[in-house]
Length: 305
Ligand SMILES: CC(C)c1ccc(C(=O)O)c(O)c1O
Ligand SMILES: [Fe+2]
Image 1 (cartoon, rainbow, N blue to C red):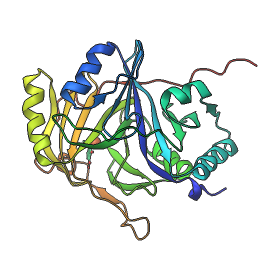
Image 2: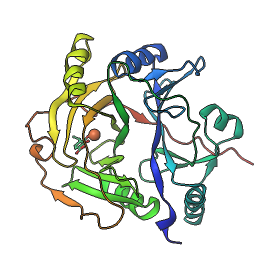
Image 3: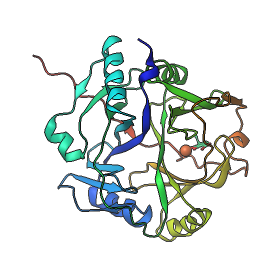
């Protein structure tokens, strides 16, 4: 079956395992600027930067990293197309039970383990809406993207293209592929970096104003948070960026601006040369800690029937 019916609305939410829930909750609210409606429990906190139920879920866990990345599909039909395709290619699908769906504010969902990295992807069509997001110190526009590190970047990219209907917007030769969840117009909602580890590279929040980047530069320093890259300008998506570390050492990016693609007639993906200037036209040099921390939680083994 063709994957063309697997169509996305957006990167829905990210779930992170964090070693100290209260410390991370304080960081993502006070420093990053997400809001907490208090709907969590002793071991999980729901945070948002949109009118949706949540954009970031923090879960108490021994191994900090990505619990899962969740994709909101364009429609129920698109969700069913994804389910049918993954079943056809023999992937194990894990339905999310009704109680957990209720807790997450979503209607119906299932999860897979992406075969080349093991990252858990969740798919759902609808999430509950709450009151409009009220920005605090930073006008966060949306949860932007996640970049994963893969030991076989071409294979991870190929799975996303061939089985998830993602499109490549740009590649930096042998370093990273930037992919959009078609037909979402944003240059990338997912990046796949190459290298010697499988894990999280960074998560991204897009901000509404260049001043949000400038203010963040001073705010994170005043809070003793380590800046690991930038400020700078990314040539691939044409965005201005700043990266800093969360309390578990995971890299968080703020970015301002991003190229958007039409559904029909989009430009071809470019291949940028493997040099620092392809990542930052202002020539900042990343700190060695940039993109180094955060494991990928795997799907639990299937219980015997
Ligand atoms: C340095 C990282 C991998 C990077 C490079 C370029 C962009 C972009 O064009 O938006 C990013 O978002 C990145 O995270
Ligand atoms: Fe990024």
